Image (cartoon, rainbow, N blue to C red; front, side, top):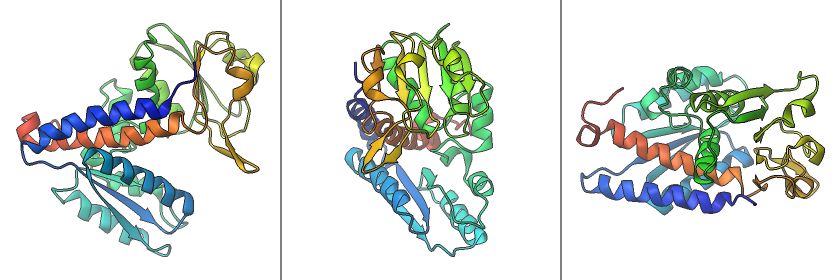
Length: 287
């Protein structure tokens, strides 16, 4: 089965739309502010996708654009301004940032309750403690897809290829929170195929085109390809899709697989942030 990320993302958006309708009865309109420094074309495209998704469900969104030569202090000042605005429930800082700006310092400046990307140390710490708040959106999308597919993660053999702070590390923690048995592989793993062949669930986020071949996949595995690579005029993933699709029980295509789910989770967490920041909805806010 080919996992239709667009269809699953539409389900997330519909779930969010219903929550937004309930918030509207209280006079609350969820608001997302994206912050983009410079004019990186890929970053501009990702920001547009997020704003389009917000528009489809009824989230008020705005893009804060700073010039390429903006200083770190100017960026931090703008984030602090957004932290203080009641009509902004979520803040998303688009990476990468220009040289001279420390992304860690910038991420730490975002108020944890508005960190819809889930990268603030407070949110990461909660994730590691098993008390998930805002979590990184790509791992959350993968977990959502597995739940919709009916895959029970308790005791499942999960292998993650790639140990980034964006996907690999947080996804490993989320899988452990659901009692999966997790292996994390990376560039220093000595025999990658030995590990990947064990996987009931295989997630690949390495940034290497067609890294995973058919003989590296366990028959009946659930395969999630997070890779986005340009090869000639094509966008391809980290998995040899044509060779693996007949072996796997389910597999995500590239494009159209994990990507739409990631964007949908930005929407979902913006709504969650609005709910949690509202005394009317959540009582005493846990933040």
